[in-house]
Image (cartoon, rainbow over all chains, first blue to last red; front, side, top):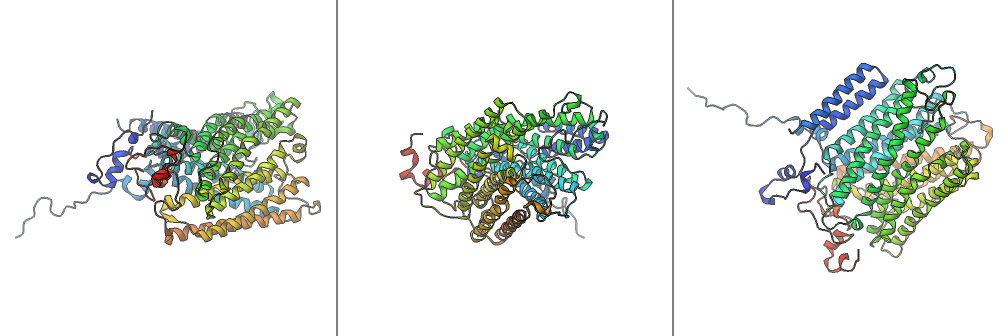
Length: 74
Length: 562
């Protein structure tokens, strides 16, 4: 249902981990694909008001970002 | 002769990866708290942009025959003022609070879909940039925040393409920007629904959820059901403009009223999307500073749901003047009046919460009480607009402008500042200066009433909205000048807040983890909370779990039946 593993994990003993390690253990990993996909959408929208080539570039970037997002940890 | 060993001279420190740099940290973050803060800062930036546009509008209208802006620039400025305030300030601001507070309130460690959450934020930022950059090309949207067709459409003799008549990209910027912001809102709403329904702490039943969480849930459903109509309308508009379809062109068999129906069937639920989370904030702030549990929890929660349902049945009250059939007018007048009932239920419950409490008038509480008063004015003049013959007289006049500003500024913006003063210590670990907060409150209260109350009279005197100037002999000039003075007083109050913000970040008083002696779970964390929020997911036995923890001998669960 959810891609957030944090609710399912038991917290390791506090004295065994630093706060950073604890955060890492409980959180989904950081990702730049959300940023990349939204940037691709922006380029596509700019393409609609400027030139079809820019629109094409935007759509290609969006496809790459979606695939990258999907395959990030595979 | 000295010999060198392997590894000598090689640095043992690893070079930081991009994700570990300061910028990379923020770009790649999926932490709901960081994203919440990013939403709030972005929204506040756009609040300043939209506020500047408002001051330009008011400067233009301060005196008759104003020459500050040309008519075309005025159209762009007032259109972008509405668009910015609604789509780029209020919505992201409320989403930001939801992002930051909701997972903490329900005892979760993050949102259900953290990456989708990050995606939603970046789309808002880029969508806002896209809309705002249109000014640089001299082609900012210019047909009002509701972008009425056929104002932006093909007219007789322009051939097949609407662009031939409205040759700029103004309308395209609006339609595409709204599409982008819609994508973000859908992503955010889905995330809130799943988070709230699936990730609550053990024991937190629906009937024990904090009321802010309740209202965010209702708002998320509203967005999911309301956004498709404006998305469809925007796509149809783009097709009309670029492909040669005629959805909204009467001359070619289309219907300009179709735009109004599609837009307002989104646009009126949108009003509640903008106010329901504010109701939730007020429902959190009032009990804490009245030292009482909220009065009528169940009524407040379910009246929010009732407002949500009814909000889909009232859209055509924006269209009484277009010549709707009498039956339709009667239906929409009735449903609009009905929606006042659950709204009044909330107001009575808030007043009952304060009544008999040990009230602490902090800045946050003052904004919450100010909200009730201002929203009440906005609600009452809204009910007046539900009366069809009266609406005929004042439709598209400054009376309507007054109504919507009492609701959205006197209502939502007051609640937002109440929320900022309330949750800022949790976010930053520091208390905003109370004295400056109270100065800001009084300035804002005076400014709002001076700016927006005269607009009632201007509307009754017949001043139409959207006009860029007016003649001096119409009896409108004194009221317009008053209104402009009020707008600048509001601007001054925002400057006071910015000063307070900077001073607090530099040398503000340390807040501690629970500066307000509050009731809900977000205060059971450090200020600011750790990345993982809770070391141990808390168990909940009543509606005030943190109060129970602090007062085990008189805990709510010992006496409560919910």
